[in-house]
Length: 185
Image (cartoon, rainbow, N blue to C red):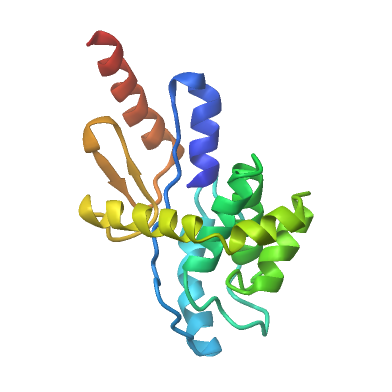
């Protein structure tokens, strides 16, 4: 979805503002057995086959699966403080879906920050800033209040929701309709 939305945004220009929010699929640590998680990741093959999909690979490493959603969500917000949201978000998703790395591990989170050229001292300080964790929780609670129960979910002007990963053509069509309605108002 991230790839599709980035391409639609490039196509329509600055009239489209994309604001990423945190949604915690697993808000609390919940370790999963490796073999069970590997079977779960077979579901990634469906989005992997779509046009404009990012890179997905069934979990093939012996690295433990991620245990919960909070650490990577906080890490993305910490990267955003350094103006690196998109770069870090993309790299972290690649580490998870393509490289099969545990993105709840502090080592992986720091390695991706290093790879993205972030100031590691500032990043480490921001990772433990309670304000970032509060932002993550606030984002999640806002989504729940809107009736969102999964990711991805795109919420457009007026609250219209597009749950699930969609094809770029559908995103573009709906977004163009919203933009046209906005201009005629």
